[in-house]
Length: 452
Image (cartoon, rainbow, N blue to C red; front, side):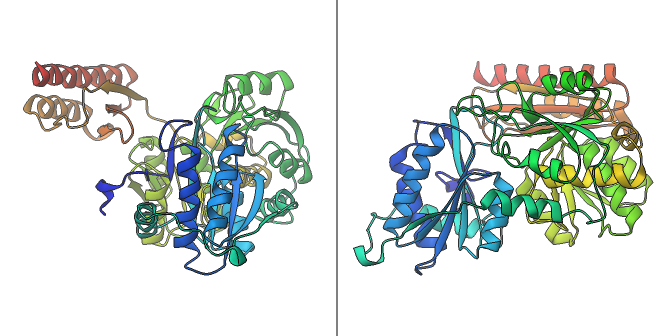
């Protein structure tokens, strides 16, 4: 089964609208069985299950538990926990795999299932394909004498809190820092405030009252307006916004200005460089701001771009044997600290730089000058639109010639929707917007000509 022939797995597990195939209880039960068969490798092993705060998480947790038990696999239930915590606990509890029930930054009516290997990393393609193949087989329950048992890990949050704290030097304390922490009514609500408080910060909390329906609603890393206002009202030093499952972070400085993932990545890389601990260079993505690339090059730090998505960043980090990478959306990977993207741990690395330098977040990000970017999503009638039309090539060449070395153009088909994403970046905001509009218009005209 090739990647193109996959029925269920996307770029990060299986995700969709609750109640619409495949995000239904019956499928998830069989998915649990298939996972147990493949990842436990025929042994009476153990697999962790954690979830975010969506109301549907209870239903899918029970379905997975039943499927795993039918496959003869024991289950360790973590309850609501950040995605990166499940990666960590999978390693430390010596489980065969970890399962996360979450749709990350999506609204509550979506949900998904994603997986970690026994090393706390995303599953390789061959294992995902093996799970898909097993799903095609009839479900067969093991003998009653070897059914899997379930156990709840009551100290999961405490274990992860201590791990987060251990990723910064023991000499570092956050005394004197007033921080607003927005947990998006998600999986970090009972973890993140304690991490920063126990390290000495004066913490103001937001988004820590999940009700199953309010995850990511007007809060967290996908909607920063409330955090920006709260930082100003509280006269805080900065704000930290996490997403629903805790693997992304965006920050706000003391003046209420947003500090995105590219800028946080720059700050972390600079800190590692100054401490002499930066290994190799930095991995961004095709969407990373050109200002990040130029700022790192000016410091003598190598920079490479991977395809969009943390899976691609991780693959390139391992290929280059580097440790730092991330996306402008706030998904930052510090392999010298943990095995996957982690919003809390990434935020801690930035706070270390504040403490060690005595500088503000605004000052630390000032060494990077972001280029204006403009993106337009062009709807398509189908997924098979040809981007190689002569008119599109002509308008692209014109835009690239006009931008020269001070900008770039990116056309990217969406992996989940019938859209072409047009992104233009350069030094002049008006020019960038005009060129992006020109390209989008030509794509629209070409599509009309094709479907006429």
